[in-house]
Length: 246
Ligand code: SAM
Image (tube, rainbow, N blue to C red):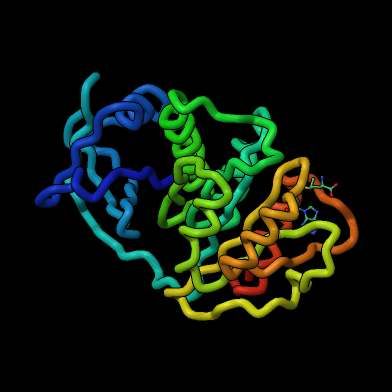
């Protein structure tokens, strides 16, 4: 059952009006007709069964037939601090990490980051990544869409994330604790942040900065994984340990 995402403010007094790309998709790809129903979801983890009452090139309008609330959050949320990677690897990580249930992603520009985003392209790149997260959320039938933040440098990242309950930095070639056994929070209002380094690895200074800001170095074992492998492996281990994959 596909669920399409809208924003809560598009649903007023029991009716919804859809415009833009979703309207085009419903009309052209899904060939939606008046009288047919679709499911919509919003950022408040609510879902709405909609009866289509009108559609034209500009908009689709519908009546809310039923509204259901998403299941309560029972596990801590997981945030991915991901160093920017070349090519479409970032797209790939966002798609897969969304399917694995990440709550948000913060792109990090580190000393060894190879790709340097042009400032004038930040917002268009963030919009594109947010669209990938939206599509992956729809495909995996999630109740919410992860947020993709704007890129930031390591110092800003380490300092601004200090309110996260549990902060982990994936540190290759280190004798850090294993991710499989490090203590994780358990309450739904807590969060786990895992930071993944670039192809060239973290610098000593960055690892020092991270630990000063309360990040715990953790290892995924002796093999050196590609950054995208480490990102998904760490998410899978954490989500499995939190009970999100069972
Ligand atoms: N250039 C680094 C080196 O040769 O030591 C390897 C960096 S690795 C390709 C990219 C990132 O993935 C690392 O910075 C780290 O965050 C993570 N990573 C890879 N293998 C890991 C492991 N065995 N344990 C913890 N983190 C790992």
